[in-house]
Amino acid sequence: MTGNYLNPFLIFLADPKNKEGCRLPSLSELSKTTQTSIPSLREQLEVARAFGFVDVRPKTGIRKNKYRFTPAVTASLGYAIKEDSGLFDSFADLRKHIEAAYFEEAAALLTNEDIQILDELIISAKTKLNNKPVEIPFYEHKQFHLLMYSRLNNPFVTGLLEAYWQMYEDAGLNRYTEFEYQVRVWNYHDKIVASIRSGEFSNSKKALLEHMILLQQRPEIRQTKNTFE
Image (cartoon, rainbow, N blue to C red; front, side, top):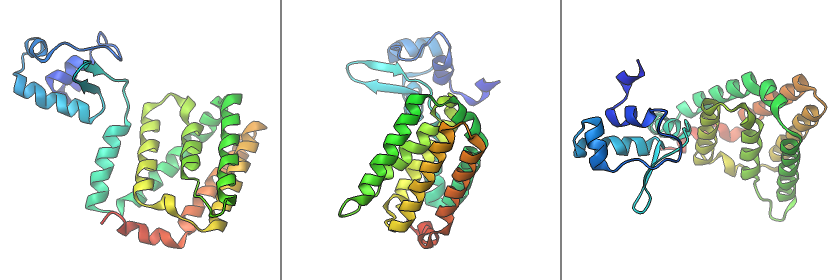
């Protein structure tokens, strides 16, 4: 069924016999195997590379990558936002619902080491906010949310969230410098982790949702629609 959407090279690549990290045959061999001309095969290979399915390098040849949803989402989302910058708001809303839907499941899977890293991200973020001049802890914010869902082992959730943070940065939201807003965000992060540590996942989710509302309350949010133009 899925073969209807795949070109000959992708059908070959998706074969379970081709394991992650394996080196694929040369183009001439692939041409014979897939019964595809080398010019067509080059085009199909470029599609696979754009989706992140393979790496192509002079010395190592063609190697199969671990499947990631992120490149496909980022490319499609980047195009969509370029065409209509207001679509970022729609995608941000999707991200909010995804995080809310998976939150309690994801939080329950976090290890003690994960929680310690979340604590360290909070400390690092607050240190940056107390610096003179203030540093915006975008890296910590991004890593905090991605780590929260990292144990789900769901490449589609991961891909959507990674694409969101990439577009968040491209939209310039990572440069928002209103100090009180930043402090409130990280106070919520503190509450989220504290509740997870005590096993109170519903309270932690409540803090997460309240924290997400902060983004909608920022005066600059109306201006982000122009940042892609």
